[in-house]
Amino acid sequence: MKASAGRILTTHTGSLPRTRALTELYARRQKGEPVDGGEILRLGREAVREVVPRQAKAGIDIGNDGEQMKDGFFLYLAQRLTGLGGSWRRPPRADIERYPGFKRMLEAQAGRPAVSAHSGVPKAIGEVRYVSADALGEECAHLKDVLRANGDPFTETFLAAPSPGIVATAVRNEFYDTQEAYLEALSRALQVEYETIVRNGFLLQIDAPDLALERHLSYAKKPLAEFLGFAERVVAAINRALASVPPERVRLHVCWGNYEGPHDCDVPLRDVLPLLLQANVGALVLPFANPRHGHDYACLRDIRLRESQLVVAGVIDPLTNVIEHPEVVADRLERVAEALGDPRRVLAGTDCGFDTGAGSGRVAEDVVWAKLAAMSEGARIASKRLFP
Image (cartoon, rainbow, N blue to C red; front, top):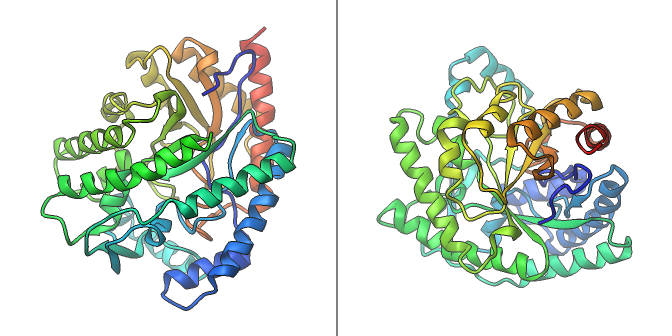
């Protein structure tokens, strides 16, 4: 994993806007309607061919496939794991329940085609096993072809896969006797994804919003200690799945949920950061653009990361159509660099994905690309100051 030697490198957190046609197919499939799998494959591959050069044009150094081949950052596993079926609705988010007027406003805005990570989510009703790495292998091969066709535009390329913890909480367990047994099964299954991504020469990003989000979701009415115990078990499950993967090939993305909301029930980063440092990863991807967490970079002064660990600092908010000024981006990067004590360990990124479930994004597509370009310009400004 490359550090920012001489200049701040830019990346993002994974999902980029899908086309309307692709989104509609993904949304229909989640509802159980018949869809043409061949058409999904064709449109997905076409979208990857479009999104790679657009990232390069926006100044992204470490890019990906935009997650175009997935309907959601963990929901795609319904096509790859055994034992999943039925559906359920996730518990409500504690912060949204506190503000019924805001909740009504959100409900009034619903209606466009989208894949939901909250309702219509499958359950674990049988033994969970990974069926085959063939689909992922084909995705990797297609992405390599696209990269070559565009002159290998990225310094490095990453692919994302979910943590065992977000699957264990979002896909309700109705088969295993204990949460520990369910996590162990998911760890073994996801190990296939993790190793396949790295074996194909890509960086692995593990998406683990559960390590912060679930405090005000699954554990909203429980003591903090119970949530921290859950987080510790998830980190242990991640480490087991990474047993054969070098830490420097892995970055861990943690957030409080990619949704617009009050977020005043979020667990402080200071409470969870010591647990995140137990993960065998080379970088943490953390949100600092969200106004509820813009101050969290200061934790990095007091809770020291390993000397070799990098931080992908979220300096762009993926939930608003406000285009951050490059000077604001530069200021945010400089604060993180100061807290870490070494600008080489800082990369510029987004707080989360722009379309974590197909159609769920709140930022217009043209604004997404303008935001990424502003991030790249801000990184250039910060680089001039940090690497004189």
